[in-house]
Length: 383
Ligand SMILES: Cc1ncc(COP(=O)(O)O)c(C=O)c1O
Image (tube, rainbow, N blue to C red):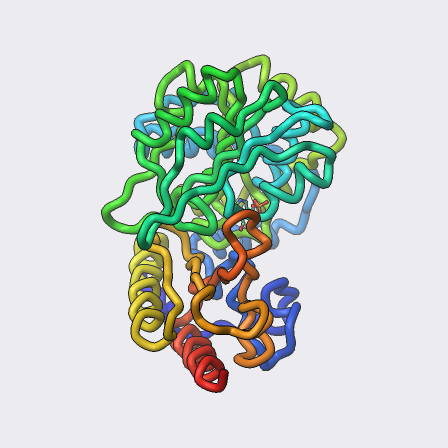
């Protein structure tokens, strides 16, 4: 079937975090979910489960495990066995469980800012120290300074939280880059927790490699986190999974999560299975639409938002805009909220290298994106 992503979906009054935070006159382009309906097969599967009218504890169907195994093999040639897949209600709890398990309070957690704020805030809130060698801006993209990465490691560095594809800079790290990162981590006996939640939202010309798929040595030291939530717009259903090949790590993970990390809810399982099994048609269409939005946005920024530049987006629907040369009075996201009534994420939330930037979520009908950009352009004209 053909999905019409141009058609606006009313989200006001639907318990949407994105649409609830600001006034109704604000266009919310911040938190990472899409203003698009989910794939029809997912909606159908959820309806069938609701019609059953019993919502007891759930356990994932063997089919879900099998579908994930097949997916990993088909997309990445990655052989994952049934027991290596652990279901979790979100990727963020998976990140927290990983660093809490591997790094004691006072130990260090390695991250690459500017990066998704949970990577930075959660370890610090729980008494861990950050090693945060920043990604390096190079032209319209970002690179890894491998020497700085290795130099930041100390005797107390225990875990590297990798974000690949990277939110917010939009990079898909190459197998070469991942190999170098993995070599450094192996040399220093640092566990890798790889958040790959955006791995299906990749634009043509780029290819995702799960770092654990590089080889058995890397896999043995890696916890991989994936989810259908960004891919199929199911974030509110709380379904994700970890792939942990090392049995000792997996056993610890299960033990430490016991009593803290809830099971995935029954709707999440049903939606994940339907999405992975029957969501490809929707995904192909949404990717084409997002690509159109990305290109429209990039053109608009370069032609009409003076002195603002956008990073090259290899993946995700989260654009990273450098506003530091735009003569905006004060904080750019506060400015656009007040003067344009457009809500964006403040770049400084993403740690080192984020000040002066905003993150813009363009997973919405193009007409809404255009309206937000016109408002931003107009606000800049008034400066
Ligand atoms: C890199 C990254 N990890 C995790 C999440 C959230 O994951 P979850 O909702 O499964 O906890 C997001 C959401 O934006 C994200 O961008």
